[in-house]
Image 1 (cartoon, rainbow, N blue to C red):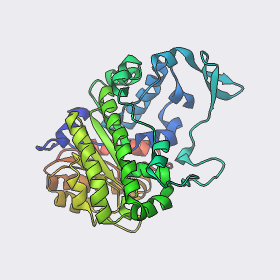
Image 2: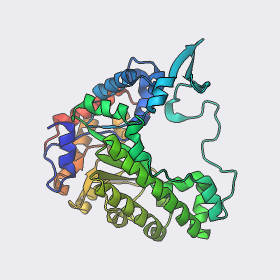
Image 3: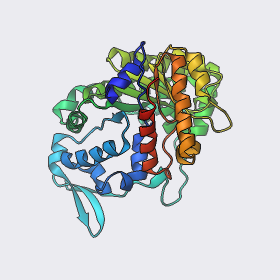
Length: 380
């Protein structure tokens, strides 16, 4: 079976006997390990030349060896014609000759940290006091975009990539939950306070963000995606009551739309799900993905799959730091076997994964070893 077939089987009610292997957040992995993954210069990430884009993506796919990949959006046909990369005195620019506009590009920073050392957390300058404030700050949904995607040529790179992988890999797109987007408006502290003091504003903002995510789902289908990764953050810090009343209806609507579009949904819940696992399962995702045990709590994948008991697919949560980066080869293989053996408790509805993004100091060779080990031990 190829990667696409293995993942499709893992999503099915019958499950699979051949466990697929993936890493989550391959974009972070690529950012932190560019020079180990490809000989292409870093600015190829911004190239309007599709052949150059395909070259570095082919290198990445072949080097990692996992069973899925993320599909990219791309420039419009007009932008592809009028925009070029230019190198001047060791500096890189993306130049739009038609509009006489240029942007100085910088190599993405390992770990994503600001090279100037500035605080990374978001602290909005404008206070949200009304629905009008939200209307002013949240862009209106563009309902025509999924249909325009092909006409504007923004799916050309995705189509080329799909042809390149030739059904060997399962194509996905990432989105974030509507509630997680509220962080952009309020920041962390403001969002948590508003959950209690102004829940009607949180709900109003979430409804607007939900409309945008529905368009994102339709766009993902137009690109050729078969799965949607739904990222959830911060919601372990709100009460189960708030999670039930605000978040469950939002995620349930998202998974309903994903299903109606013929795609599969993966709900990635960050942090401790202990007091709300039933609520997470009630959202109706085709699969759930959880972090590894850390931050003072433990998530035992054997207990999770036994509790889920075939109701949906489950992603593994191999420890990205203690096992993948720092563990011996024996420890890595032992943990892979332990997690894949747990798949039997979920009727084979299991996809081997790590619980969080690959850490910056993890060598690419180690990630490839992880993928190869899963394949060697991949039948249950």
